[in-house]
Image (tube, rainbow, N blue to C red; front, side, top):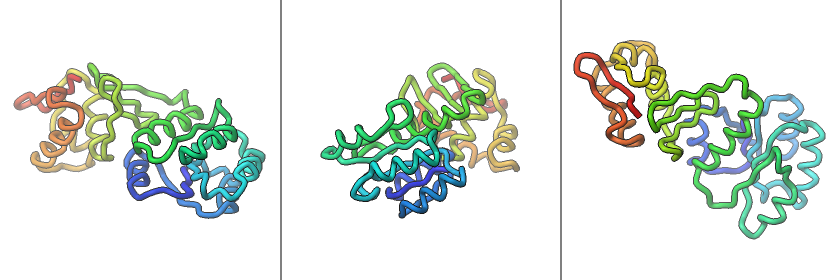
Length: 211
C-alpha cells in the first residue's frame, strides 16, 4: 500500500499501472494512523505538505514504523534541507519535476527490500522482466507498460525463444478466449515499446520473444 500526500493523476496512473495499490492521505494524522495499522509498504511524501517542520512528522512516523521507507518529493530550493532529514539506507528523494518512471523505479526498489526472497527475474536477450518489482527494461532502459501489456510480456518471457500460441496468451492474460485481432493489437503495442524486432511472429505457432 502506497500513500500519496500530493501528486498528479499522471503519477497515480503510472503507479497503479505497474501494480501498486495507492491511497491519497491529505493529513498527517491519517498517515500516522495508517502506519500504526501496518498497512503501508512505502510513503511518497510531498515535503511542502508535511507541515512547517517536516522533521517533527518524520520523527513521529519513524517512532511508529521505523522500517517504513519514505520517498520525498521536494523542490530544488529545498533539496539540501530535505536530504538532511532522510535516512540514506532506507529513504530516497526526487526533485520536482521528475519523470514518473524514475519514481516507479525507486519505489519498487524500496518496497523490494521487504521481499527479496520472492524476487524472480525473466530474461530474453536484452529484455528483462522483474516480476517481484514489476519492472521491465530493454538494454537497461526502463519501459513503462500498461497492466495488459505487462501480463502479455510475462507470458512471452516465461518461454523465451519459444513460440507461445494465441490460446495460451489469451488464457494467461484475459482468462478467456479473445479474437486474434485483440492479441495482434497488444503485440503491436509491445513492439512499439520494446522494439519492433524483439517479438517474432511464427505462422501457425504464435509469437516468440527473442529480446
